Every structure is written in C-alpha cells, then in structure tokens.
Image (tube, rainbow, N blue to C red; front, side, top):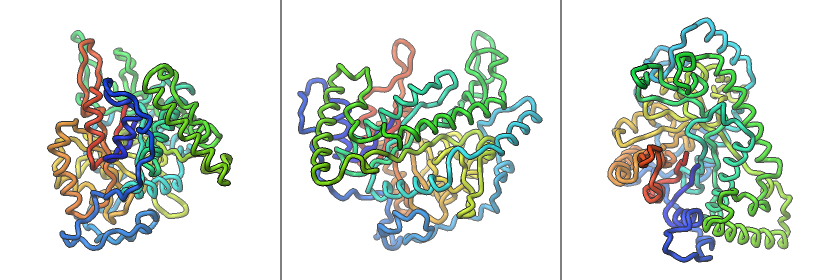
Length: 462
C-alpha cells in the first residue's frame, strides 16, 4: 500500500494509522484537522537562479496546456519518435520467446482489443498530479509488488481498494488537502530481475519474470516465456479495473461508509480503535454538512476518482495497447493511466525511455541512491521537454539512511534546473531486510523515517 507524506500533516496521518510508539497513550486530539497552511513546492524553480517566474496556479491545474511559465527545456535532439522506435535501442529485461510467430500473432490480437483505460482519464490524472507537484494535494499509491493469476479474486481487489480508501480518509482528514489515489493494480504483472537465470540444487532455469511472461514454478516448462500469458494478463487487468470502477462509483466509496472500511484483522487492535475514532469524527463532520445543506447523496460524497499504474517493462505488450487519441492526436499507452520506468531500465539511450518519451501518459521514474543528479535532470528533460506539470513523478527508493545523504542532492539538481516534478518515496524496497525465518520484511521505524522526509509525498507498501 501507500501513504502520502508531508511534514506535520504526514506525522498526524502516520500516527493515526500506526498508533505511534507503543509506550505512548492514545490521544483523540491526534485526529483533529491540522490548520491549513501553504506547502512549498520544493521542485519549483529558484528565482535566485534566474529560472523565470513561478508557475501560476492556473497553469499547474490545466495539464492539458503545454505552455508553462518556466522556460522550456531543450535537451539534445532525440530523433523522430514512432510507436516502434524503441526497437532500434538496446532493450533490457525483455524475455526471449522461443516462437516468434506465436508472439507476433498474440501481439496482433492484443492490438485489436479495446483499451484498458482511456486517454481522457490519463489527462485527468496528470492534472491531479500537477496539483500535487505544486503542493496542493497528496498522492496515495498502493498495491502488490506484482499481481498474480493465482491470487486473482474479487475479495483481494476489494480489500486493497478498501485500505486505500481508509488511508486516504486519514490523510485527507489530517492534512486537509485532496488525496490522489493510484493503484498498482490492473496491470502490474512484470518483474525486473537482477539475473536472467536462477539456479537451485545445480539446476539452472530462466528467472521468473512475472505471470504475464512465465510461471513461478521451478520447472523447465513453467519458466519458458509464453506469449499467451499476455492475453490472460490483459483479461485480468480489464476485469480488475471493471470492479475498481464499480467500487469507486457505485456507492462503496461513499464517505458515509467510512466506518465500514476497516479491515477485519484490525477489528481488535489499537490501530483499529484509533481508526474508528477518526471515522466517528468524519461522521460528525458529515452530519454537520448535511445540516448545512450538503446532502450525503451529492456525487462528491458518494464517488471517488481512482487510477491505475504499473511499471512499463514488457514493451511488446505496451506497444500493442498504445493508441492514438482521436481528440488530441497524441499517443497514449492505454494499458494503465500512469506508467513508470524502473531502476534497471532507465538508461538515457535505452528502449524503455525511448518508448515512454513518445506516450502522453503521466510518467514515473524510479530512482535509487545510485542515480547521478545530472543524469536525473537529463532523463526528466528527455521525458518532459516542455516541463509540463504533472507529467513526471520521481519515485525514490533508497532506504532511510541513504535518503538523508543522497536525496537532497537530487532535489537540488532538479530544482536548479527549474524542472517541475512530483516527489514521492518508496520506503518498502529500499528498506528491505531478511528476518531470521528467511522472509523479507521492513522495520517500521525505517519506513516512517523515509515517508516523513519533508520533501516527499508518497510511500509504497507492497
């Protein structure tokens, strides 16, 4: 899951979710709404650097306009983009399919399928992310590290959506700003691997790359990349998004249901009690608004916006679902509203960057402590040459200690270049340790430190 963070508002929200330190007594005042204050957009161009005037609010909120007040960035010419121009670049992390004819047939079939999402929805998300970039909203992103065919079930989708609603309510009530909810769902199948092969007891097989590529059983048959899995992944993505749309607009997300969003395992916990306290406060506020004339059946009270995202990894699949928008003439990857380029595929001259620079979706860039500040600036300029607010989200994944040392240099470089981005942080992957039992886990203190950095807006729990 994920939680948006920003200084004092984040601290109040995190306290509401976690209950704070075990030795501290509960305090109802933890749920009092914080006094609204201006949140500095830490990415904004520094006037002392002669980067031009700040972007006005109107420009930030109208993401459909390419004209912004900051100076246009002009990176080195990248050549003409085409939907398949990525094939001329070096492509990492792609599987080797044994039957090219079968692969081509599957991709042609997917090209005839309806889009999973629509261009207008992606543009709307970009507008909301632009608000977050200017400090007027939080971003809440959550879901599994990778979806699977085995765990595809309506209850799992509902529970993920429910906890995002719950966390969004905590953040919105505590921070007094809108919360942009984005799921790592309906398409997050592919997994980048550090090694192309896996060896067990002397047996060497291709690595598991996600259910849309091959199987996780350690057998030769399971590990062979199968293009038919892309069709199953498409079908599961469509079904997942269909259910999410129903939850978001069919009454399940109505604010008057806030007391019903608690997960069963929290029913008899301190955290569950604290959430119920907050839910009752929200109910009281709803009662006041009803008395004032804003009825609970108003659309703003009964529905919510919800978007999907995944890593742009399996390029043949992404290309097959890319469509030219009839209203704008731009190309959108219609497999998800938002896509991101991963740590292992963000090479400036690589195939993944080449593909993403030509699609108009909001884009994320995963950044570790290995990222060079100047390379980050170059990458942003390639993916967002017009410096459009909401287009780029930087997702840092470097652990609590590295964030203190490395993150300020990245922020300074981006700010000095006058680039407009949304900063979010992923404290899960960067803070992973192995427990004595052998399972991967993350210390909660490290997660909390990562998400309470004053320059971050989100963390991902998966």
